[in-house]
Image 1 (tube, rainbow, N blue to C red):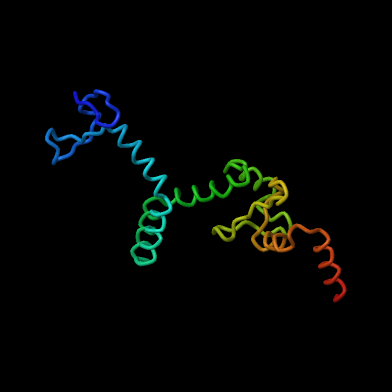
Image 2 (image 1 turned 180 degrees about the vertical axis):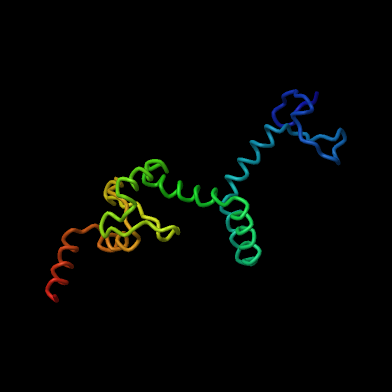
Length: 168
């Protein structure tokens, strides 16, 4: 048994991390207090640590790229799946809901009918109203950019159609 110098609770030795240079071989703080301190430190120093990471990545581009490649090779589906889940979460969609929407559109763009491709850039994008964030459907990258640049303005798109028709 040992008393934590931080919280003052008496705990078993298994609740303390080992430390070689300590007189009894264990840290003076229990694992719970150490974890609490680490979380608090991480929150307080997040921006500094992020800048240190960014600086390291900039100075070691090749090494960082190799680490990323090794991770993706070791976990091929995890990286893509988690990134996709994170993007869909922004629209309130799950992977299952996305797949249902995709099947309802026969894996085609809702505007031009282009088929869904295999790569990330060829996957269909989630189209949504910018005013309230509600999902309208799935679009190919080209059609999604078209609507995005038009800022969802029906009047602007109608004017563009009239312009194109005047030159036919």
